[in-house]
Length: 350
Image 1 (tube, rainbow, N blue to C red):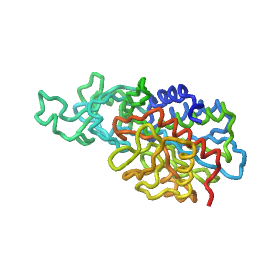
Image 2: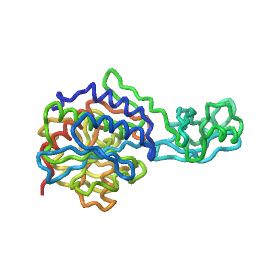
Image 3: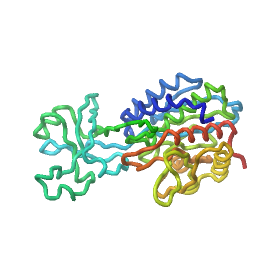
Image 4: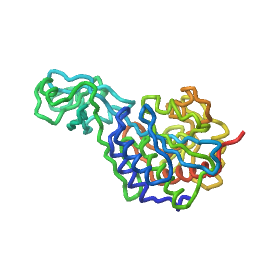
């Protein structure tokens, strides 16, 4: 199954999707691009009221629908204030590791469609000027955005149309190496947009039909906790396809598909997790089973939203989450193959 995946297609789409700005709440452009890609495949695309994209394909048996969730929103920031020196002060959107953002380029997007560039900096940005340049904490209250425009005052900045509430989108620096590593900001979780479409292309080219109907949910507020809190009523099972964790006391690496048994929101469905492990073994996939200590997913949000569903969580191993992230194409291939096997086999059964 892995050999039939169109690797060039998956990597090219990953490069493109990762490069589209989409901090939580500002996901119109990436959802538009996803809708265009969905048009290449047989199915029905729609948007819900909060802006999530939902693409449904037909299964051999329409009596059940399995949900597959991927979140397209990322971390970022928003203009909180503009000080008298023309420095942009900001509030975080999601939980970026802020020391990694010191010196990062960004795009400021105004409400009327104008864009400007800038750089995240410490309030003590110069070693030749500030004694605490190296030691000052790198956290939002101690940082600002330097605007690449001729401005000396806050009024100069406001005259450009920049205002409180405008988004600050961090440059992703996406690269795919000759050794098939994918390194970028916000691999979590836009890399799995490429996984989903790799799966759809695999199904189309191999003429595979899933056992049951499948609704792919591209959510837009996962990083702030409520991405898939609302799901289509007909979904009985939900698989969140998100990043797998790598680090101390974990077994996963970047080339594997990670199956999460439990995260900070609690255990995932026993039957679904057991079935995913069984399929990973029978398909001879490179996989790991782990417990994520500081993590919750769109599946967690759906259950906390009151949905009567079974839920599971899988995804490629991702290093340095919420910082300068990295994964490997083989992690995507194992994720696609495991998801394909699960959808062909049907829902988990008691």
